[in-house]
Length: 591
Image (cartoon, rainbow, N blue to C red; front, side, top):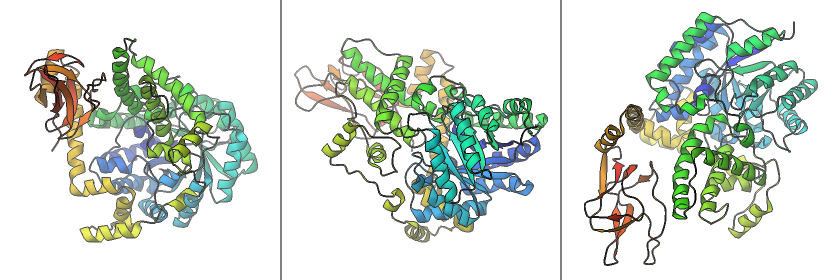
């Protein structure tokens, strides 16, 4: 018989790769004993990136949830692990050193055994401090290699990074194949290389199912020395998530590996409970597309977990692009046309920004650059004209060094815009902040919490924590949940019923005069032949919604009343409208 393979259940990532939110504390407490009863997991992912933040957004205390979920696993010797974004820790932007150091003390006290520390750029300067802080706090630091497929991401490239992480104190190495595009043969060779040089280092493989390579990759890494495999369970396995434990166990058992048996009665209980959580409320925030695999992901390398948000962004931009195409008399694009164009544009942008592995937050940056390029090219403005500071931060080196070479176009564009490149250690660019957050806690009379966990929560997620403490987060969440339920109910209505339903919760924007409707005004006395707004676009009170050119030539701005979200456009760009005509419907903003 071949070596023993351990299994890990990535319960946190199952939800993150499916939808927006995580189960509540009471739900986690219910399913933990059932996961233990399954008898096949030596590890469970209990928290980390995209766990605590979304708990706060739902008005829940993530510290209570982490402690409650970890406790039963701690008691039976099942190791718990978390996801740690290195320089960004548990959020999407850089975290001061003193807050990162506190994180490991808090997480260890809460019952988390292992921290999976990764950098989206594989810059060891963003990982090594976390290795040292985690070890000092009593945690097991797991150094992570973000896997992708490019000319610069070779076995030698990754092996050299693993050497540096192990030298710095990493006790384990994770191969994080976040998009599932790592080629099986390369992953096998990399596993063998690391194991040959470091036979005592445990290797854990984490691969998403998205494009369909994950089962072949699991077999390759196991045959070359991997020790632990991340898996999922129904109803959230496969799709953009991870392979199911049943299939992985069966494959490896048939290959001759020593694998644990699965208590199928407990599996079915866990499956039923997870579906119950979906039906209860979590499913309202799950994009159905995330339940499907797609070979298209191989071409662009984007992680499956962001497909839901990407499709929403894509549909909004498509409406704007189609407005421009229509005004030019050109053929409009379907969502499939747009998807292919976006993937092609990502393939164009990615090498030019230095092949950053497409994982949070760099996958979002590259996708957003590509998406904006599609829009601005349609408008005749060319590429790279709508890039924010976060996108530029990746290019300029503020988050670490990109693996490949930047296109000279970006170097010239940065110089033209007065932007400065840096090769400084990213974490040294951020000032410590814990004392300021202590002052805020004191001024508000807030308790620092057990093991300073509430202080840590404020320092890690300031805006979300303040909204949580004020009660605004729970109020907003309940409003969002009601909207999601309303939308689901609306999908079952006839067009007439749906319109009535939308209008009941919205205000009409009415034409005050006769004239010709325009949705933009270029400010020099003429209306612009521009685009209609897209459904979902938001307006603040006082914003102009559109303009009407009166018969006598005056341009009259039409306000968006008290503001809100656009749910229906009733009058087209350039239409002749009469006084009293309904132009659009804006859903009223929540109190």
